[in-house]
Length: 427
Image 1: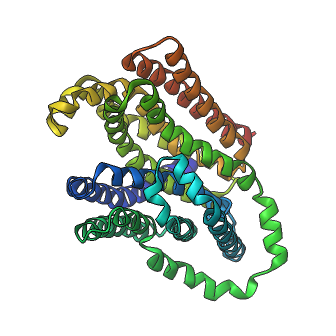
Image 2: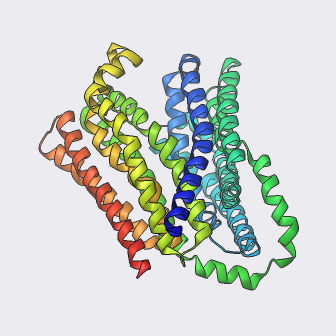
Image 3: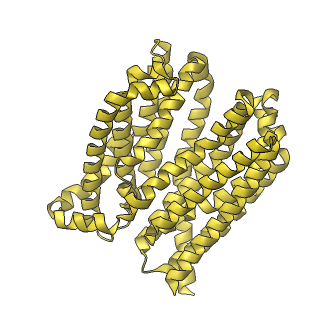
């Protein structure tokens, strides 16, 4: 009875922390949405294209920063050990930033030419800045998650969005194009470093005398699955996020891709808002329990999964039956097709929403190999779907129906597999 009560308290704690993060992230998303009509009127389409390529390249390079060791910061039982891992992550970040700078110095021009983005070449030096800034924020954010400092994290999300939008609009108005977009994107990724650094500094002053090369070596070996499996997983994750639009552009043209882009952006909002924040809160809670308490982790995971499923049913039904109408009213009659696409993809959204947070359980049990296999399987399934669509000349609607069905099955299997891992630890 006591165990059930404890798991319910932990579950409530997760949802309380989730709401703190969701409030900050939600306000940040609103600011971003409200700023878009101004940004699209200041910058030309080719400027937005430069931003898209810059953001994609940064997204691929940023995970290299700490070799994903930053993700493991909430896991060590003692703060002194975690501090050793944080310092190692910071050193890796500096080294990778320097290597990236040297590589881009020589390779930026041919890469930009290959991507038909010659106008982006003069600003290649911003990429190392983006890598370092976003990597540093990730390290400090992971430490804040360890400390369950969710209010400061939420505040950084709000300020990132506000200052990012103000920077992009302000610099655009004085004619810095596309530079304003690029600088604004960096601001969007890095604002809040100083406020999160204050949280880290408290433990730095307390435990810096316990920094040890021997301890650091031990930690790097203990969490070696992160660079081995988590790092390539992140690359596959970025690929899987971008691939539907890339395949759509190749198979169905720019206009259809634009409709699909809006649909995916709208569908990503609840996942990024609640799925990501729930995942952070869930991760912080179970990291404190550790892998030696799998029974409690199993109870918490069951509670979270059931609650997420219950919460997601109403928006799923609304989107499934009223998607075209909602998009037409919200975005205008020209975007009705995006609503049709969103309706088709709603089932896949439901199961992704439920499975996304609990994937963090794999980190507790140091099962990064499974995390990699999940991302490999998703990428292979995605490529297979669009390859079949190409050879059989499927329409966009037929392709998306198959894609949604395949991805729904994938995420259902992922959820069951994670429960299997936790139950195995309970034996």
